[in-house]
Image 1 (cartoon, rainbow over the protein chains, first blue to last red):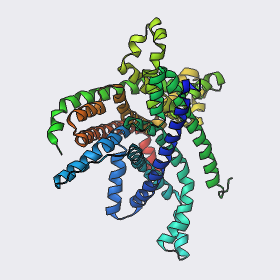
Image 2 (image 1 turned 90 degrees about the horizontal axis):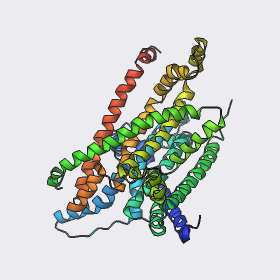
Image 3 (image 1 turned 90 degrees about the vertical axis):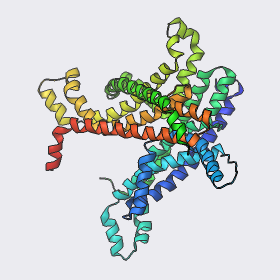
Image 4 (image 1 turned 180 degrees about the horizontal axis):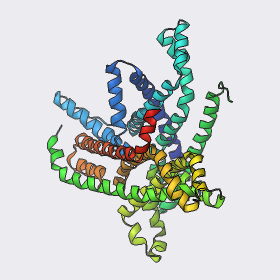
Length: 229
Length: 233
């Protein structure tokens, strides 16, 4: 059953690509989330307002529409813009980059909210104490807020990762041969759609289980300095 | 930006909105009822009751919706003979039926876990008081536990409904003409990709915030008696 008439390895390769896309998107999401959370927490409206718009708008639009918008709409938008300037260019997006960038961009909005909550969960007294010790705002941020924030952020980020890895299945619509696309190819060739998609779903389930184990380990590690009653 | 393309496709988009809202509403309605049952089974102490539900929830929450959709829509083809024999094939060959079935099962699993959290959050004093008044079993759940659990779970459930509305865009992949489907077909015809997808995104944005608005209204209503308490604290 695991061989799928020779298509089993295709699914594994697809699974690896899914993981690659997932990790790449997650890195983008974490970076964006961190930057946007800091913007949202700053009292400067020119930073706060765009970050607010970003999280509100992105969380209200389906991932699929955004992926289609970036992958198909992006090149035509650039071409139309270039035509307006009197240039004739041809843009072709790489599905891997277009897909991961879009997924990362979407989940950056969710990560923003997680980081924002985590930063706010660090007791104010800690920051005041750091300032009293003579640390400037940046030093206090780097030494005090940043390391302690992770403890509160990890459960939320774990959830973001779980949703993100499942959202990568949508990249199959732009023909990237990740797990879902490979399963589709295998299903068409073997004429056993149920078996192939079920195998694919088990691989996703395996990723989910491994992520849960990793998350528990990370939470334990992040909380190692916390005393329990 | 070519606005005329959008204007030309407005009637199609109107149909698309109907399909999206219809599919979401049906799935939410059936999924809600299923989730209530699942959540009650999930908190049972009998392993034969809670374990199958745990497995169901884990599977539907641990795999992408797209896989589930393909599993039901394309996968059912592998058992065509069996479905024909029991007279269900005419249902499974319809993309609409498969879409609603998948979304319903998916939302039932997510909402089931949300409501379980709600049930576990009901303060034990309330249950004790109900028991002291002589309630048990169905009456206890119907009158005391479920109303309190739903009240606790409502904000999280609002999120789930918003996710389901967005997730319904996947049905366009199995040929249904919802908002995304209309945008894809119109874009393929006119090459006005970003105009049409931006317009689709805008419609979803309006729908999502409309859902949030309605659910907040319901939340205010079902927690009306608690507002005074919260304000006085």
